[in-house]
Image (cartoon, rainbow, N blue to C red; front, side, top):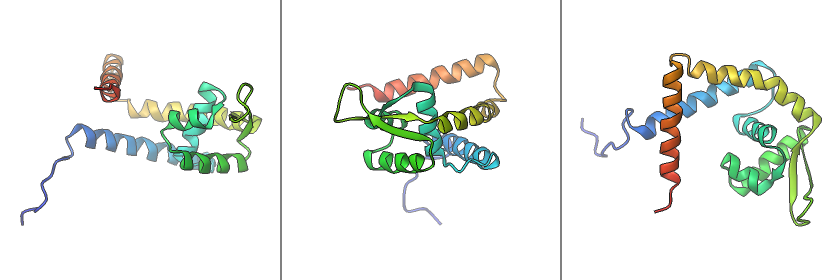
Length: 151
């Protein structure tokens, strides 16, 4: 039987392959989080990671950094704050804004999860030589830059 809908995104396309790789990385990280007893989903982990690596920032900056809209960001911040991993504090220069920062518990959790995260990303690249890894990062960076360029 013929499919009445044309197939534009076959499994070999760039979009499908990148999507499958991302899904597998998310699945592996969430599996590792569960194995370590961390009650976090990937998005919450990503928020913690961004704060740990970039330092305190506004909710808007953080939402942009982890690619979430404002409503989704607020939900993640509420959940992570309730767990004691981050805090909202008045911004030093802009009294209308808040700065989001990790608490001591958030820093401790990140230190606990950091090595596992590195191991997961290493496992994802285990079949690649150092040269292939560099090329992969270069290629993906160039694709990302091309997509972000304004016409």
